[in-house]
Image (cartoon, rainbow, N blue to C red; front, side):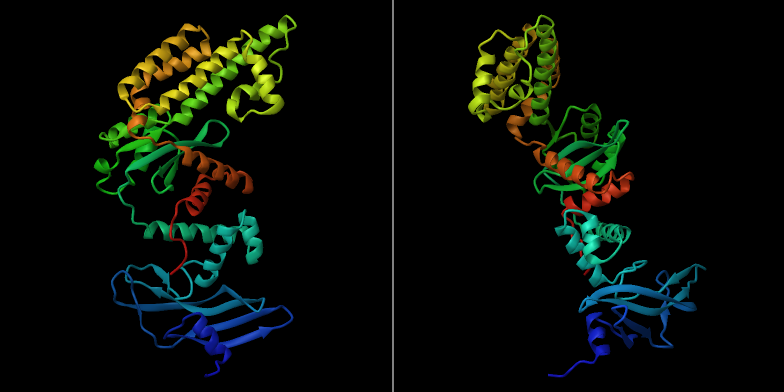
Length: 409
């Protein structure tokens, strides 16, 4: 077996081909650094990428790149790279085979950083392990996402999901579009307007207008309008967890109102009972279950609201549209008859959006995956101290949730 010299070893490591070659390797034990000098052959002809004609070399620029460590020694690539004067008059730095344009890390090192980012809980932790700054790690993520989006071949999806996420104080939101079948985030955009939602829908490939069978969403008018315009054949399915959230909020409002009324006359029956009404009855056990049963046998408005909320769960199990519709109308009338304002408002909302709610029986899709996505986004924001710039948030969401091919070839 032929033994490799250091120059040959690093040339193979970088997969160098003519005109590039390793001309020197220096090991500095004091600074624990390996410096590899790479040069290209003099007289090499460079082409103008715009015209494929010969480009004139204007001057040379010495640049450095961080490479994979060698035996825990930081490894640096140093090369003088020609700057080309193009026919158009602009100047372009020639591309080197071991790094991306404008990158300060070799492709091998970027692949290493991407693996660390995928397995670490925070960008800061991955950057610390790689021995680079958080800004450098952000640059790796940005280039990885750009690379992944260029490689991605979107197929017309069959089911989509739209969800919103508050990104800053002051009613600042992002709209997230997901492929519910694959669980991948397709993209996200700042705002939750009709125009923003249409922009996302226009990212879908040709053929999506007829391929998308259903879209899960909450009852935000902008989402309804945009899907109606761009995907007129798709069924709009209002997310059942969104409806459950409204029902839980109504029960809690009624509990707070009734607690104030009872407390005014010294009755503390509902004190500290908030989470008993919001948890599922079958999840309660021991003392909590006993306490809840004692509340249910009393003549409380909160108990009435809770019973109607629990009763609505029967709707999701229907297989017949006709019987489901009858149940819906009966439930709405019963809720209105209680004269409990928060519950009556939910009944009005269900009445107004009955078609989209009924569509769940034909297309049983939800944004449950999107809720999981929201949790991941919240963790990303917290770990990055808020991510004040939307584009930074977008890059991180697509990096972790876009299911993109991120590593350099």
